[in-house]
Image (cartoon, rainbow, N blue to C red; front, side, top):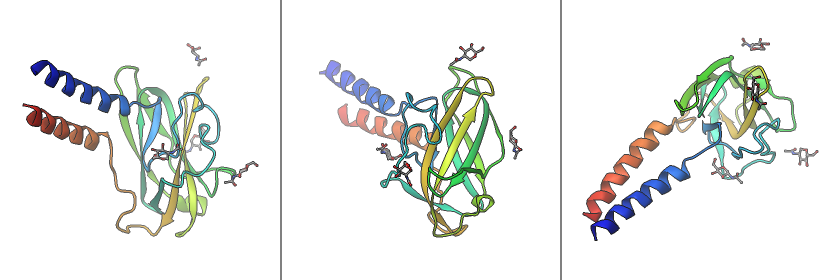
Length: 181
Ligand SMILES: *[C@@H]1O[C@H](CO)[C@@H](O)[C@H](O)[C@H]1NC(C)=O
Ligand SMILES: *[C@@H]1O[C@H](CO)[C@@H](O)[C@H](O)[C@H]1NC(C)=O
Ligand SMILES: *[C@@H]1O[C@H](CO)[C@@H](O)[C@H](O)[C@H]1NC(C)=O
Ligand SMILES: *[C@@H]1O[C@H](CO)[C@@H](O)[C@H](O)[C@H]1NC(C)=O
């Protein structure tokens, strides 16, 4: 019986860890429209070229924040915006220096974003692009679908990162351990 309990707990932990495995980098807020390691080198959206209608996140026109998670990387991250992924992406963040040695990550980067730099207006639907390059031979792309809203409205761009996920996971495991004992 104890063996069964132990096995159950390890199985649950394994499942949670496995389900949170991602490619080299990804949008954690707003959530990505698609995440595929095999096509992440393809512009403009890492192979995810259509709107993900289940993941259109309200995002403020000014004073927005994007959170990306890097498993590894040594280069520069830039966030850009376009009305659709067929339009020209315009940078809406500064150049963010990424430095995450292999084995150290994941590390989160929270990047201020000003959509007005790309002419976005409240009410527009559009696409945020995260572009990473090491300046040598590696480029990674990922996109997130957003609905542009007025700045400082409730519900816009709430930050849910891996810290909260880890916290939740710890609580869940503690609960399951208690339940099984
Ligand atoms: C749509 O976005 C959600 C949230 O990021 C993701 O879980 C889901 O896999 C995406 N759908 C597709 C088809 O990639
Ligand atoms: C982008 O262009 C492709 C090919 O020209 C087209 O199939 C697709 O519907 C377009 N997507 C959008 C969002 O306009
Ligand atoms: C970011 O880097 C690119 C390429 O080096 C440069 O053209 C651009 O001006 C930089 N942007 C900012 C905001 O520093
Ligand atoms: C990129 O270049 C570095 C240094 O030249 C090399 O070690 C690495 O294997 C290359 N990566 C790819 C994906 O070609």
